[in-house]
Length: 486
Image 1 (cartoon, rainbow, N blue to C red):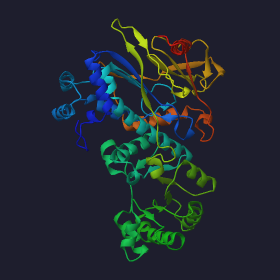
Image 2 (cartoon, helix red, strand yellow):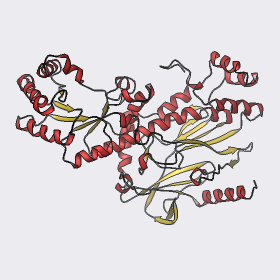
Image 3 (cartoon, rainbow, N blue to C red):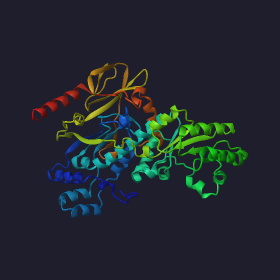
Image 4 (cartoon, rainbow, N blue to C red):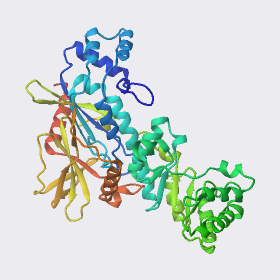
């Protein structure tokens, strides 16, 4: 799988995936069917939810899994792998099944967002890349969604490429930010590759290149009369920047009948400057002129600016979005939950830890989202074993996962499965939606969450409950481990 890094992404795996694969091969376990869940444990920024993103890149990766001759020779040179295993890798192809939550869907801690059913070596090998992609894009989509909600309907643009952590951090980060709600990006290649609208006008260097700020603004408006957004804080925002912008708008745009234009602030007291600038523009008759601000913004600062009465139409958000600076690790994990026996029966597996939050939910599972039929709002998610179904014609008691004595009874509700088939027997069965469809899905799905779940501080704990059968299985396995049985 050649790409911009000129590497085969199949080799983008932790080395222990290969040592385990070799071990499985030598132990005659290569074809043992395993089940792995991808899930995460905490919402970023102590929020109430996260946004699923990155599935499209995982699908492309799975479709292109293979080992080149040079990869095999490299592995042979390490003197750790049997010739039988290396021969196995020569014809390597993913033949398993994958289910996943569609991109743009709100997700919650401890529930599977992807389940992989595949022979042990295959399932183990894909762990690193799957986590890399889902962790990164889900993190950025979640941060973007928080910032866009803080903007209260105003335009948010992703400006972070130069501060991103690597090429993919910038390119797929812009894609994830778009899913989360951003209107566009400054990253040109993200537009070229994914269709994330790229835009931009000028930097301070443009203004500095001319003998005067006025000349710089005039030249730009003459070249781009229909895309004239002028950076007004190179020298003195209110004494020269805004007045020169108004002068040029009058001289260049008004004679052409153009009323749409903009100014941008990249420094200073944004609340004060935008209030003053808005009055200056309105008094001069440029009521349609948009004001954009940038410079180390995030959801907290955006909220504060609006509370202070800032007159802002658009936000350009850079480093704190593209790196999710306030909470830069999503923390998704990939854990074995079951193995399949020769007769087709499934044996659940559990991981136990002294850290209660790291104890896994065993077995091959389904995830349902429960919607109130009257309001259309999401009320809870419900995990059950693969052979269970939710009868939404009957009442269902749901418990708070962190305080099981707290519960509510769902009565008039609709249950929808969250995990959809993506691969079956190694073949893609899921039609990837367009980026615009994903973005719309995200906006709609987030609208089904109650405001209490979406607030930034002390959000409501959205219920993610286990069925009685799954809870009984988990309790039984925990007791067996406690008693050193099994």
